[in-house]
Image 1: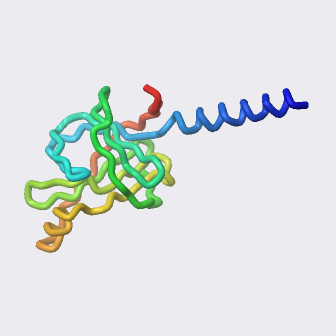
Image 2 (image 1 turned 45 degrees about the horizontal axis):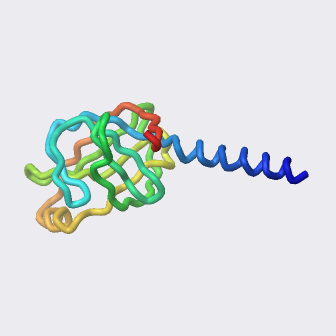
Image 3 (image 1 turned 30 degrees about the vertical axis):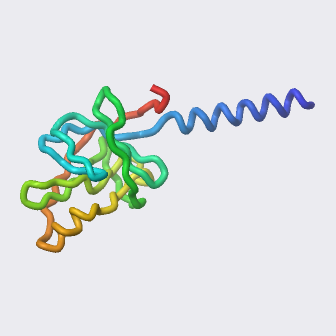
Length: 139
């Protein structure tokens, strides 16, 4: 009996670990410099994904470079997902992550800098279509 309970517990933990190891994200080619988490990032290819109440960003094929708080939003990003930026003049801020799984979509909190710029005028929105990614967190 003890063996069966241990086996069942082991299978349950393996299932939980596998569930948390795979996270959907959106791979996107950003053609301009942008800001996220008080960092200025260059144009390039990135993978953006959400975990709990955070949005994470990594250079495609590289390491995680930024992480910030975000609110849940129910928005379907289509089959490939979308990444949305708020741009004020020539300064762009990562604003939203819309994933193929609407429950994983997030809206990033505005930084102090973006709030100040927003007081001066409405942002121009840029939505970039991405490529849906399955990402293994252990890589």
